[in-house]
Image 1 (cartoon, rainbow, N blue to C red):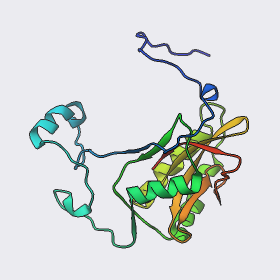
Image 2: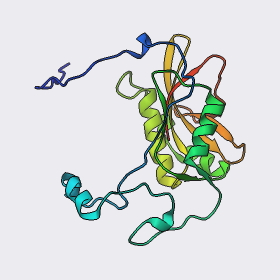
Image 3: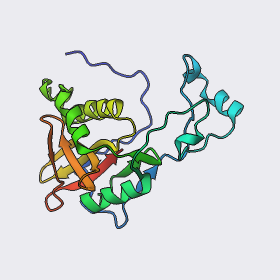
Image 4: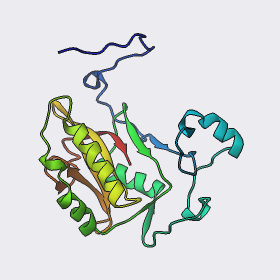
Length: 208
C-alpha cells in the first residue's frame, strides 16, 4: 500500500480522543454559525471570497427566509430555533465532554413529521453499503445519511453525533423528532431509531 505524504508539515498538535479527560463540561459549549454568505457561490467565486465580502459588506447571519436577497422559497409549518435545538440536545444527550460540544449552523430548522424522516431512511440504500475499516466506517455512514437527509428534507434538524462508551467511540445520526419533541438517534448502518443512553454513553460532538 502506498500512502501519500504532504511535502509541508503543518503546525499541528495531534491529540488522541482516547487520551482526553473523561470529565464533562459544567456548561456545554454551543458554537453557533453567526455569519455566513447570503447567496449561492458561483463558479470561480470560491477563489475570491474576500473580494465578495468587500463588495457586499459584512455578511450577517440570516434568521429568516424573508431576509434572503434575490427571491425566496418559503417553507410553511412548525420550526425550532437553533437555541431551542441546542437546549434539546443537551437535555436529551446530557453534558458533553470537555473535548467537544454542540455546533449549530442555522437560526431556525423546519420540523418534518417522523413519517417523512422514516420514509427517506427507508428509501436510502446507505445501510446496504459495505463497511470498510477506516475508509468507510461509522462516521462515513453518518455523514452520507446526513447529507442525503438534508437534501431531501430542506432545513431538517438532522446531523451527526460522535459519542464514547465503555472502551469505544461511535458516530451516528441524530435529529429532533417533531412527534416526540425530543432528540433521537439513527444508526445509519441499519436505519434503527433509538434514544441516547445517558447512563453508559458520553456525547462528544454534535453537528446540526
